[in-house]
Length: 248
Image (cartoon, rainbow, N blue to C red; front, side, top):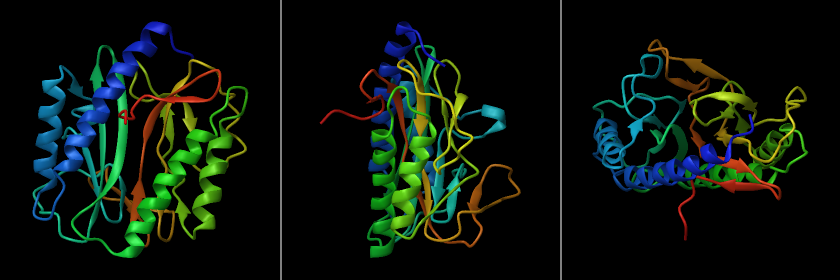
């Protein structure tokens, strides 16, 4: 799980590129735009950078980005339905570049959203930051989930259990697993040189999920909204270096 210096440097480059692609995709979000159109933006932005969109063809996934709208927790498949004012949409970008993957996502408002949806987005973003702050060499990976779950539940939200963060490098999904809730079984000790994602999925209501027949789309069991944010990070001697955060 500890990466070589060569892989880490390649991941810095891929992570920066993934962050740039996510920013381009987010700028395309507006009422009337389809998620298919956003998929085209992501695909073109990856190719322009000499990268390949990691989701495309992954276990049969048909698109270049995951677009999860409103109650969709994750892995929503882009389609031709226009986004509507007041909705929220998560865009999950992963690209393969220089022999490694960079993985990041964010939830965006579509036009003007209500205060409760805005608060959900704000709390979820803060959950990610608290998870990153919990990254310390020598500590168990369960510290990350503890920090996230504590903040989410203090604000009246749920934390999805079924989908977790993951190691990443030359492989898209590798050990370790990174739960976003406190799990005493998550005993992996963080070491400098590890690279993994933190990507909490926070719900307005029930944290349980239901799968659609497409085999990819996971939605909240009660149909209420959910948000997610994600970074790829490197464990350092002091804490964490975020590889998918744009400077400034």
